[in-house]
Image 1 (cartoon, rainbow, N blue to C red):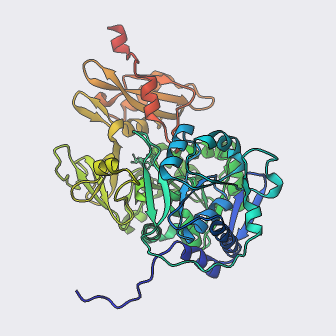
Image 2 (spheres, rainbow, N blue to C red):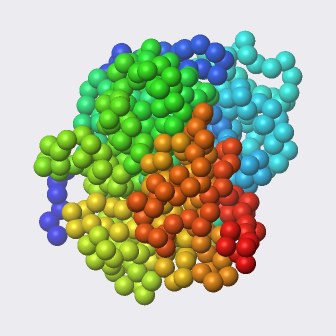
Length: 548
Ligand code: ADP
């Protein structure tokens, strides 16, 4: 081998905020604060505070490799923690506050967190959980002196107090780019949560790969609002992408309802929103009430679960908003595929493009995909063969943090990661996620995709949301049950829904029954919890059985 003769400089997260401070000093980060009111500053001012925070962390005894946990909403202090922690070589462990308390305890103890930074909202929660945290010795409340509680956690530190005593000057240490910078646990829909430990290198590569795959999403002067939380899967890399590309960054804080999001998008001129489909339902309701969308909004990036065709159609047709659909996993940093049009597709009329956007997209640069069928053979990329989707790339986990058992189960002999999703890949590269393996309805030896049936049902105007689960059936093993939520003011009947479905899916895929509920159970990451639904309807008697 003839080695190249280029400098071998490490790819470090800290370089991103330095670049933004240098090149985009006045581009703003705007936050809806937990204390109330809006906070705004530019990337240069942010970098100064990150320097103070990094010095404070060193003063608190945080060492390279230590796990520093956060329990926080999308706000500027959380953003600062991302950089200050990684900058000194420690690991920013974002904990999802929507998890069950026992899961948070498990995660903090498993990660061996040493320090916890948390928003005011979580003070009562932290007070309650503190006795169960075995390794955390420092607690910092992410607020100013005015909002510090009179009593409560002994020795509780104040974020702004710490910063005010520190110098903003810091020369970032240099270390191996493979050093860990962040940790995020999966929500544990099967078994205990598992830790995904990202490196400085993987984080920057993921950032570059995403920008390279869809540069238009981040062209200068964009104003991006992540509803996707900073506590989940690195908020899809936005905390790194926005400073790097000079985008204005709007952090919505704790309130993520339609009216609050609408107002923030309107006043700050957001032109793009990123989040899971359930969030957009609330926002679309607000569009309808107001009779228009927020003035600049023209793009929504939706991922984390399948985006229903009906939602894409409404946003495209009624509001001239382009939907970019992404598929990924915490284990993939998280993006695997996203809507990428070829030039000839780009020229199609918007409603034709909207059809393509319901697919899960084409692979992001740096991500390889393969399909493995039930016999363990590779499936063709022909849009027909389906099987478990495996992925490979430098932004994908090689194993879980301190969990050899789980690691062994999910990495195959060729070193690919098994996603647990069943998929097809078309000849022209579009990925179609059929279902999660465990959500497929197994009926008489055939698989029914719950996603397909839900998508078809949501074309029924009177439905706000729905989910399909398999319920036990003596003859067919399982049959699909549609659990539906009515749209406000609408009274759809079972017959109407089945009528709409009948024109869209095959007879054997039709749900055996429709049940109306007020709301669907949600997971900690804003997805419909099929696990909870299955438990709720475990003994459900389908009509035919009931009669028989
Ligand atoms: P969790 O929410 O369980 O913590 P992730 O956010 O990592 O974990 O979820 C990843 C899973 O979400 C994927 O394996 C897939 O099943 C599902 N998913 C993500 N995006 C999509 C999408 N666009 N379409 C269908 N399923 C998706």
